[in-house]
Image 1 (cartoon, rainbow, N blue to C red):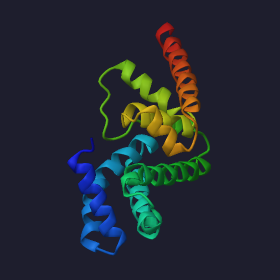
Image 2: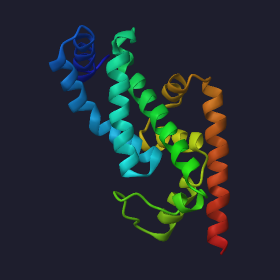
Image 3: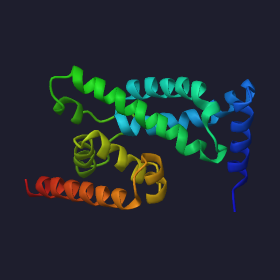
Length: 180
């Protein structure tokens, strides 16, 4: 059974697609905090995340009429946010001499609660961009395997194997830190 807020969201999407600016504004008000948190998890930089969110909405304005199923809006908007965040990260990495400086910077919104938490954040920050996106979707956004697969356009088995590989990589990193 679908939730009332999902139905209300779909109605807003349909109205926005037909040119209702008030409905689009309501979508922006509801989804902006969600998109911003999502972009912050992916980029680990509040400024880049904010820019990515703004770019996401610009792209959404232009492409909203192409969305065939209003029920797919959450996955659709987060897919745009994911791509925009990934592009922003790639630009940032190209500008930097090394990835190490970025990997050592925790986000301003997260206060480390322990050394292990700091080590884990550093390990996640050191992952490849696509792996960090996957970890953010699965653990940060609590998305299911099938939802992630749909967003990334890959089979569920691919998502499972990527998660397995990333977990193994993080475990190896953390065990190495504990042995130091």
